[in-house]
Amino acid sequence: MADMNESWTSLTSPLGQTLLQVVLPPELRSASLRFLKRTLGCYSSHCYFEINENDGVNTNELYNAVQIYLSSIASASCSRLSLTRARNSRATTFGLSNNDRVADVFDGVAVQWEHVVTQRHSQTSSWQSQPDEKRSFTLRIRKHDKDLILNSYLDYIMDKAKDIHRNNRERLIYTNSGGGWKPVPFKHPGTFDTLAMDPEMKRDIMEDLRHFAAGQAFYQRMGRAWKRGYLLYGPPGTGKSSMIAAIANFLGYDIYDLELTEVSSNSELRKLLMKTSSKSIIVMEDIDCSINLPNRSKAPQAPTSQSFPDPGAPHAASGGKDGNNNRITLSGLLNFTDGLWSCCGSERILVFTTNHIEKLDPALLRSGRMDMHIYMDYCSYPALKILLRNYLGCEAEDLGEAAVRELREVVEKAKMTPADISEVLIKNQRNREKAVSELLEVLKARAESYEKYGGSREKCELNGIEEEKQEKRALESPTEGSDCKDDSRRKWRVKKRRR
Image (cartoon, rainbow, N blue to C red):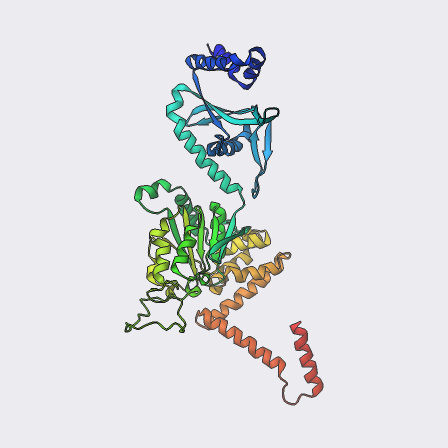
């Protein structure tokens, strides 16, 4: 029976249809094919589903999804493949050749796909016929498995194709200008592997991101917008921008870098939000100093008497009630992050960065707006090991027991940022011994300064600047009793040092 079914199947295949075109006259061809298909349906243990490339007007999205999905499994099971690379794609796509087949397994059920390409003739005029190709995928499933996997299998293919397309395409970073978004290619190489921070904290962040990306059903069940907020705060140079790049590369999301100083009103802010796409990161860097949004709990304003506005008077960026809708207000920003308008889209991450978290209003920091507060700290020993691997290509243990012990003891006391340490390492990246030696000197000097000024980074930095100024003045000003020749020589040394 199986052999007979395969024989009937071959008659309805593209080759079988070609044979029928030769043997049968045109008037009997269509009726014969319909009869063969009905007969095959009665005796065959399989059912077949055809997915055409288009429906005559629009492209079939399911066809495109199947094509992308099969490209991910065809390379491992087929010996003949077609290779393509789409525009703005980072990867080569493997595709089935014409009339080739590939097997797949879903939930323990075996299925088979066939890429069917047939020639057809579209009559363009009474005397001219233009050849064309009809492309489709045929899915073969056993009849008793149809209800079990058909719908869930196709949904799985659609989701998988979206993930593959997002990972392969070129990512973009958008900036707002003139009331709209302008994209440029995003090629930042930062990843969580190269990010210099505590490994345990990185694992927690990555796990939170995975849970968010796979949480569509959870957010729908809870009745919440599918978004998440991250607040990155800490001293300058601790890697906040690198963290944003790592998140974008980890999830494969585009970035919308929102410059609030370019936004003139709350309504324009809403329009920008509506123009962002799903699976994206909306970034507002240095939120504490981009616009004037004071902390109301620390600086309460006394009520003022009602008065008419002065058209010629300058307006503060934060405004008050924004009755004229011509300035961004704290209320407008809160609605942007967690109001009704924030639901216009899905699978989006909002990232605020600041160097001074105490300057932000508590309303911006609560859960639902900023769900995860991430403190970007000074460089620790685990973070230093990552920097040594990045810049010197070696593990800390390869430097010797004495160097490791010194680095471990002094790095926590020095309170240097990853950016500070990177500057030392990158200058001597071709000489490992010199790089480590200079780094130890800088770390020890910074640790001594912190101990001298009671652990205050501000005092330490201010004193360093003042000492540099005093040294410069001493070199440039002549001392008493010195002759003109010595004075000229001293000035020449200063100029040479500047060069």
